[in-house]
Each structure stands twice: as structure tokens, then as C-alpha cells.
Length: 123
Length: 284
Image 1 (cartoon, rainbow over the protein chains, first blue to last red):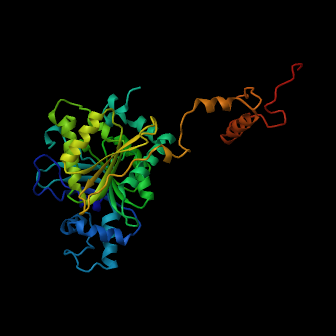
Image 2 (image 1 turned 90 degrees about the vertical axis):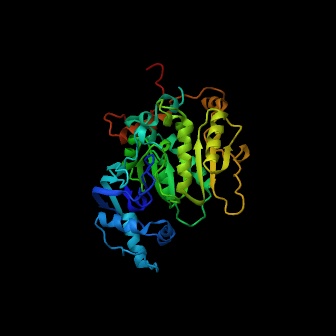
């Protein structure tokens, strides 16, 4: 299952693709909602590692607009709850991720993205 | 039989049937669980903090289940699609990726709080094609450099693996060091042929003080419930106190079997009586 938490950490790793290789763009995705246990400390720890803009964009692409476009300075429970939902409860089951720089397509089937590269793409 | 990694590449060796067989085998499950707990111990994460871990070569999620239990959020990568399918069926919590770690990991810097990997690294030591990116040193280098950047500072990565020679250990540790890792090899039960386990314990950053490589476990600490084969014990079990050989199929065994058949709904299982498991008189 691809959740937005991992999508936000995932960059294209094709040989020579070093600029503008993050975030990967979603393409014809199907999503599934699965509840997960809310752990505010985990989300708070994760916060500095997230790329806020990319997360909001990705959430929009899968049809969730609950996050504010700018990272709020105060992280109260309400924001954490929203973040938790976006990061951990939205699962992408089918579709593809496309690198906006080199246009490499990583297909997602059954919730598992195929990150394999062909020989000439290995760095 | 020779080692699995010498027979075929992992994505072929762990095909549909082998993936199911491997996951259902309770002995494999037990070994995987033990190794995972030990790896987590070596990982030494700060307590009561739910971290985000990477499971390298997660397979069917045997180790992932333990990470779930321990309250970690995790992502797993594996190259065998059949194993990942089994993991999906078992409904593990983590995110799964089909990825060849020898091609490098595509994670942003500082993504993970730690990484574990159970019996994976030996699979990187065979070249599958003659292309230069398929050479083991190249694959190891690519793997370790991308992993090093994907881990947070400070953090640890623990790999349990089965090396065949010291040269392999040498190659792996030197490549890891070139990628910027500190740390080294930890050997548990070094004098036991069966229980001996090799862990590669790598550190990212030191946070001021130099991190110490943890000590391996040794014989004295070995617990007695683990399986060790002793022929003497087997011989003893075959004889009762009078020195005569015990009957292999005694009454207890027969009752157990009959109970099992009844549970399975087999027809025509004879009923139990005081004659069950007794020999007929010679005059009969």
C-alpha cells in the first residue's frame, strides 16, 4: 500500500535524474481509506521531515483538501489529526507515479509500486 | 543442497510456491522472529517513541509483523513479487515496494529513523548479468550510498546475513565504510555451528561520542529452549527405564491420532475402549 507518508519520502532514482525528481506525480489513481491508530507523537516527530508543499499537492491529487496550503506554525491536535488522516489512512491501490523530470513511470498495482529500473537507468 | 542464493536470483527462487512454503513453515517463522527481535535489540531505538523504520528485503512480512507488534511504522522493500503478494494476503501494516536494492533506494535524505534487514545481503553477492551495474561491488556500493542518505542522523541500520567467506564480509564492510557508515560486524554464538549468526551493525553519525559496536552473544547466554540436535537424547527417548525399547506406537499415540481423525471428520474411526492399543492374545 502506498500511503502519502511514503510518497512524501520517495524520489525518482533513475541514473542522472537528480533535479526536480521530487515529488512523483500521481496518475489515474484509485484510493482506499483504511483507518489507522492515531499517534500524535509519531506525526509530530515526522513533521520536520515532510515536504509540506508536496504533501498538500499529493493530497489534492487524491482528492483531499483538508490541509492548509502553508504549514501552520502551531501544531494543535486538530492539525495533527488531519495530518494523520492524510499521511496514514489514504492508501493508493492502483495507478502510477511519474517523475516530472525524466518521465519515468512507476506503475502501482495491487497497492505495490514497481520501483525496478531497466539496465540503462541504473546509476 | 547448495545455498538458495547460489541457485537462482531472489525474484525467481522465491516464486509463488516457494513464497507460500517459506511463509507457512513454522520453523522459518520462529527463526525470522528471533532474528528480528535481536536486530531490533541491536538497533537500540529510544524507548517509547514510535519510529519510522525501513525493512530491507521484507519478503512476506514475517519481520514486519513483529515491527507492527512493537509499535513501529514501517515501509518494506523486496524484489520478489510473489513474496509481496503473500505479504498483501497477510495484511501487514507497512507500505510495500517492489524494488531491487542493488539498483539503489529512491528515498529522500533523512527519511527513516532506522533500518533492519533479515537474511538479505548475501543475495547481493552474485552477478546475474555481465552488465557492469550487475557486479556485486557496484550493487553494494549503490545500495549503501543510497541507504546512508535515506537514514537520519543519528541512526542505525542492522543487517543479519549469511556470509560464506571472510572475503564477503570484508567486501561488505569496506563498501559500507566507503559509503560513510561507521560500525562493524557483530557475531552471535561464534563457536556454535548452528546458532552462529552474523550481523552487520552500521551507524550513521555519532552525535559527538563515538558509537560502540555492540558485543555479540556467547555460549553461556544461550537459552536452552532453542533447538539443538543431540543423538544421545534421541536414543534415550527410544528406551524406557528397564532398558527395553519403547513401543513406537503406544496407546497415547493411537488415542492422539484417533482424536485427530475425528476432528478432521474422517469416517469409520474405531471407538476408544480399554482394549485400545493392546495386543491380541496369541490364542485368538
